[in-house]
Amino acid sequence: MDKIIITGGPQLRGEIPISGAKNAVLPLMAASILTDKPITLQNVPKLSDITLMSELLSHHGVHVTRDFSAQTCTLHAASITDTVAPYEIVSKMRASIVVLGPLLARCGEAVVSLPGGCAIGTRPVNMHIDGLRSLGADIYIENGYIHAKTSGLVGATIVLPFATVTGTENILMAAVYARGTTVIKNAAKEPEVCDLANCLVSMGAQIGGIGTDTLVIDGGTRLGGTTHFVVPDRIEAATYAIAGAITHGDVVLKNVVYDDLLAFWQPLERAGVVIERMEPQAANAHASYEDVRVSMSAEIKGVDVMTEPHPGFPTDAQAQFMALMTLCNGAAMITETIFENRFMHVPELCRMCADITTHNASVLVRGVNHLTGATVMATDLRASVSLVLAGLAAKGETTVQRVYHIDRGYERIEEKLRTCGAEIERVQGGSTAL
Ligand code: EPU
Image (tube, rainbow, N blue to C red; front, side):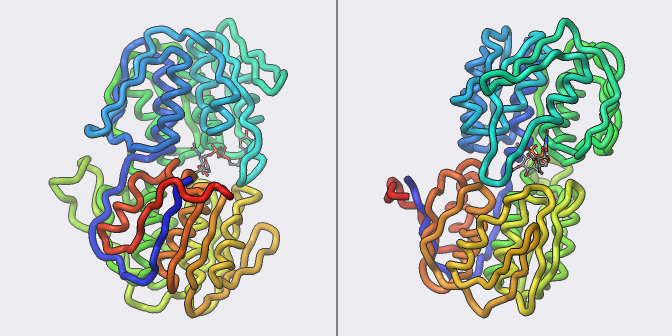
């Protein structure tokens, strides 16, 4: 198993290109099931989760072609040859659940393994199932699989009890082939959901209310192919913003959508970090993308945050923000409201001399003078990367084990950080004792 070794201390300075968003690419790839015409995604990062989704879609009969140098992925579902999403793949990546809606819509049936819990929570998919049932699907669970069937979906009004991200995506993708109008109330409005909706529109779907919590879908139009440029990864941008801040550095995040991170920039500024929107550059990957400069020369102030669905503070940036707060002057209360078990980084940060007390869904972080390097590991993507951030600022050497979690969502992380002066290296095939 690979590990990442960091010698903390250097202040990061330089430019960090932000890749396309993993959580946008995965449902966009699944949307290819909805059409027999090819769709081409641009700005697709090289991540293990995307490889897994390619594997799953190939299993369904989708022809997937990736060009890593051009960062494109072309998917062609001329015909769907298998409507079963097997446990062997779904258990490796929960986001596989997003094939349920498109398979059902295109083929009238789908058998998808229940993903089961994961390190950050139980993560049921009851709202996906209830939403699809509202569209007329017959669904039952047997032997760990969701069995869904329909002789034709029909539009309905669905009120989601919670603005579930992949639940909204699944229902949306099914609704584009439901007869009549579907209204999804309390829909998730994360930028990745909007990106999917915009892509579906470019394929011919009729979707109103994109970016709001009410999506209105006039279903039934046969979808065609498209070429779509994936939105930048706001969580990757947030992560590198903290890398700049925690090292008292000065980094420019290239190609971001500033407005997608408003609830993140505000507490970062209150912590003393200077955030500067830069003039749009002709060289930006997309006309609406900009560069954001993040610099820090003051002491880090303690700031309380609470995670919320978008546009609130993102749960996917909670662990990284906590890493920054470990070094604040004062204290910070961090409350996690989305997942019930998303503090796995806490004991590892404490092994690096952080002072953190957990109480139910909140932690109290008392700032310490410095962190010290240690061998650490975590069992999910964002927890793991928070340890890398802590390692960048810690005294001495930090070894982060189980790097495969990071490879699910961060493309070329060592290279991007090293370019800005970090002392970081990946050691391949290290100890597997963990
Ligand atoms: N929930 C239910 N029932 C459902 C669906 C969700 O109870 O049917 C609960 C979940 O257990 C959780 C909350 O609702 O407590 C929110 O879950 P949501 O469905 O919104 O999460 P998700 O769609 O499974 C996506 C991202 C996550 C991100 C969350 C929240 C993808 C592929 N994954 O997950 O990303 O944390 O939304 O924003 O889009 C990550 O990238 O590290 C990651 C975990």
